[in-house]
Image (tube, rainbow, N blue to C red; front, side, top):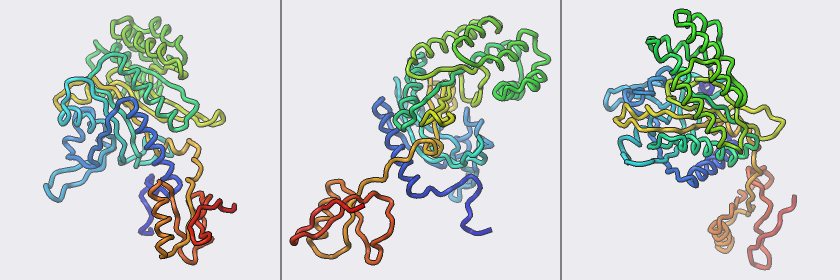
Length: 388
């Protein structure tokens, strides 16, 4: 095998795509800033016992592990930034009130979590700590939606669910964690056969409720159906009422419900959502954003703070958003004459992109749209429109 062949699901990012990703990164971080979110940058490596504690345990199989040559301790290459931001909120900032944080950086995963995915996502996200009310859930969904709009995703659809529905069904069952995990996985996959097998020893109301969840997806009528077919409990009523409230306050996006979708259940303690988007009506919508409420995420760091947030992969986003036009630029000859060098420096000081054509490369294609050129006219260097 050639030495330059990269591992599966890792790839170099070439100029056009890299420029597009950077444009999106700036647009989305600016959108978060306009909503009052402060940027943090977490390290790519952490001690493994810090990285994989609490909700981070769910990332164990996704995490690359290595040994620190300085201390001999095990390190992990982050697979997800959310636990790190929770640590920053709990340990470093330690604020009493609401804290809004955003981030953007690479992560690495031992395996892909969806077909045609990457094991090196460029993860961007936002977290809101310190408010347990629905107002925080609504703000996070609205920021996620605004982020996709800022990226040029014109057609956005929201899918809502809530892990508390299953928690309410299993509240009195006293199941071991491994079995609960299997039930969650079967629900998320709508695997009725496995669900029947794993719930066979449970009471009939619980078993029938779990099976009913696999059919509860669609528009707002799903919420009424849930109240009709699921065993009545305060937890169920609260979860359904919260989902209904959120849907009523999200008038600018299409809303649907999937009450069995529990992907990422190890994180979530309440509402969870996915945003699907397409840049044009002809495109098939794809899942671009995942988020929700995860109030336990900071508990292991000593602060059980209410928390809600979302994340997305800029590499997935760039694949569906139309590539922007090439950046306009000025083409200039290479030369050492003081007047020419001064003219080039002055244009760059004004924020103009100037490409100096090196000798012998006058006809090469650029990554820029050189629509103007610097030419000498009567002893002065002036800008002229460049012939197509």
